[in-house]
Image 1 (cartoon, helix red, strand yellow):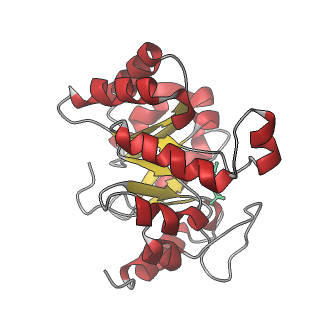
Image 2 (image 1 turned 135 degrees about the vertical axis):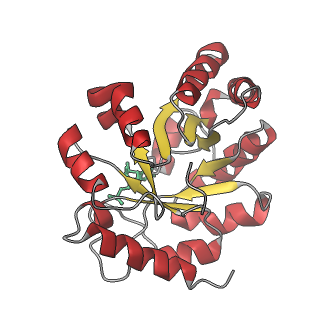
Length: 236
Ligand code: C5P
């Protein structure tokens, strides 16, 4: 495991192993963690996860489990066996599901951090109404984050705009893992509500998920170190 707790988690969103490994050869596992999501994992499987771990990177395995409690707890234990640093579940799976996952991991020596997805940022109020959720996305994010903490989870994944209200309501230790981050002057790509790395950390983000500003940069290591410098300059 990385010891100096880098805050940047690089999203390894690639369609194949080779470009992902090429990127990993250009960045330092002491300066960042990496996130492996559904596309890469479905194409490349646990063998790729183990290969990335062998290179010294802490891994956020972003598979967003959502199933009956016993199945999710077993999946979390399987992910822990891979030696990953962080995993996630959907808070909408409910208290029993989240508690079962947290309790299964608590029995392990070194366990991954367990965080929840509250409301997907792709869902607007009318989408929530259609699936039977009352209130705004923001209301639901705060409610489900409270349920996640109460169920023993370590934190949530949230948009940069949700960091400040969540930090105000949740404990200091509760992790806020935040995508939608863009250094000043870089392309927003398809992200709609973005924030700079420094501002997200200043508002209370614990970790930042950053993809294309690093993975598509001509000099990924330089892009990463300038983001780390911006974070380091935030008064702590
Ligand atoms: O390239 P970019 O920095 O936009 O990548 C952000 C990463 O965070 C992607 O892996 C994306 O799927 C993920 N993510 C996100 N917004 C969310 C949840 C996850 O961008 N609400």
